Length: 123
Image: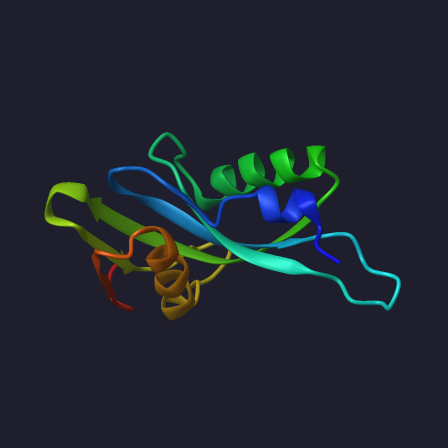
């Protein structure tokens, strides 16, 4: 059974420029056989000063849909649409480092024709 509310949430919502991002697991309603569907999403906004600000914004919107969330870590993204380039790097002091390879896989679902680089360097 597909959780329509969970399916409706976009996998990626990022802006242009350099900003902090978080990797978030969103949980759907548990099925009768005990399975709890989920999807992992990437969010990054320039107007959020801290990783926690991004997570709080997303968590609040998911709470409104009756969906639970879990922050899996954070980092930074540099998004340059004119060069079709995204760089994923760094970490969150509060949530720890996100799995940048997982972030890259998710970003590629939306930015198929981009070069996406990942690095553990930088803050």
